[in-house]
Image 1 (tube, rainbow over the protein chains, first blue to last red):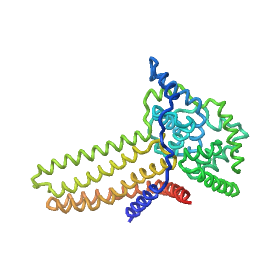
Image 2 (cartoon, one colour):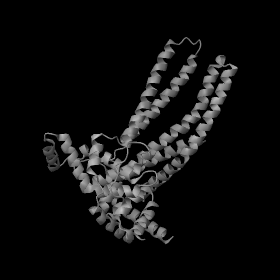
Image 3 (cartoon, each protein chain N blue to C red):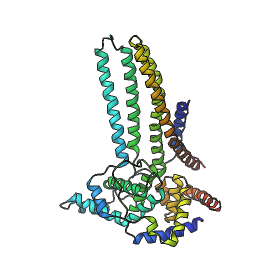
Image 4 (cartoon, rainbow over the protein chains, first blue to last red):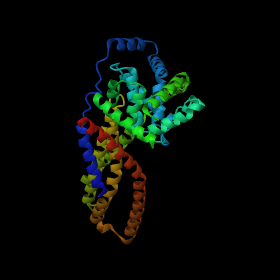
Length: 207
Length: 198
């Protein structure tokens, strides 16, 4: 009985996924000449691996906030912020050689960070020890801000996984175009979904 | 707190984060040097091991079937076991295909969530289907090997089955919460499907 229900659900799910129009949001375009030129210059050094790591660390340094904020939003009791932070870095590192500059580097980082956090493939106690973050969010926020941060976190945490991604990108002041690229829905649907999330948040804060 | 207030609070936090030391270059460099594996990579390795085991057992039992003289172990019993391992290999292969489609840098959020949910459902499905399938498989094996069944063997089998049932039910209950969470994710993905139809 349970198995039949499971098979039925899976079949329904399969057909519904096939009907979603992913609208070529994920197409990787040919590399831009400037980007590849920069990369090749850097790789021609005596120690390309070390240089590649340094280049990657610089990239992380410049965009650490994105990773930190996404992992903060998606951290829960099972997955700590440190766990997610580390997992995002590993996935960024694995995808770094394939990045060809077809979109803004921030868009690429948002996509990987959100995809990593949303997938929750990491098990709570498995894997190597997480990178200890030198500061946690409560240390960064000053004391009078703490209640605001906690309220903000509590509100966002009540949203569903994709809603969280949309609202995070919205409060990060990303354009509808960028949100649609990262999340994988059309621009008009971003507006519809944002309107619904706003209503939902309003209702939640009234309650 | 409304969305505009939320936006303001978030902006204030972002400004403070810019100034904070939240990224440890040395620790990260060490991690990259160690070639730490991502969770998806680890899962792929795990599924691959089970796939190889299933294929190897299918081959081994195939050879055993050709050499078997049906004295102690009946050919029918070996065929049942081969069928189980072929099914397991197909299931594992399918899961590996889905795992390889999980591309963090190329998929959109919805696309990735749908693939991950599908993979997780298949993993839970293996547990449920595996437990259910054990019943007819054992029934068939007992039937084909009925000449071998003495009283002691029956007692041992019944005790084993009871223990297996308890473990199975317990595991299933532990996974029930996760299955429910996956169902919620499915509902959310479906709501985006209906949104694109509007």
